[in-house]
Length: 342
Image (cartoon, rainbow, N blue to C red; front, top):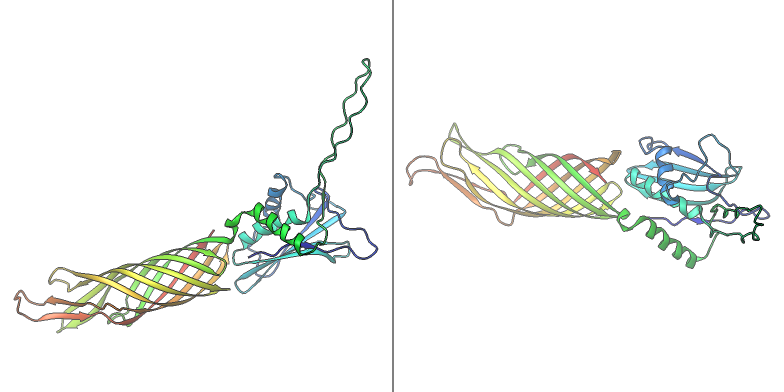
């Protein structure tokens, strides 16, 4: 998501602001909830990327004729950054706003937004001096240094040109984020006992939509008890495909699961395997905790259109009693873990 930086004209009767590289002070604030965001030094580095790796601001504490203010705040799980050119009284002459769930990515975008307020003017090369006398040669005057001025207010066609220029500077990949996740699982209605498990995931997100892959394992849990001391266990190993929609810190997904059941009666016959196949919805929440990390919690409602029945002989006699367990048609899974986005 992006917001175009559009400069406003100066107050009536006043000169148009013209910030020049090396003659602009920087006022950088991290508000409540944003103290873990990158500091002023990191923001200066991001801004310098657009000026041939040269800091466009004067050193901290130095004075200048132009002033730029950057404020970052956090509302819920979303970080909001505002970049403004201000006059001596602190009133904003032009501003740009940007939101992102990852503060590192937000600072990256704000740093490159500086190029919309301060940009390079065409160089003006002075005419060469007259030919020097042989006895007293003179060196030609050096060309003037490059200058930077504020983009003036413009119509919607001008704004479209600015959008194209920003896209060329940042590249399309800035709108994508990649997240690695891992955590634990608990089951409900899947076996006689609550079953523990673990999951590992990978997600690629573009704005409100993401596509994820997940591997999960449910550790052996008791399914049925036969007689006084004979029990059966079941475990699974599976993979999931998850297309998801996101709104702030809340997300909803549909999942498609394929894997294997492993059914055992300890001390009896060898394990029996069959296919896991399930579909269903997922609802969850991602809470940012800083530096690209989030806490993720979710709940799955798994529907098994294929529910195999397992049977294991309880005695060496092939005609003897058999332990049978049929997998549940509907079961629930609850996950909690952490994620790291880049």
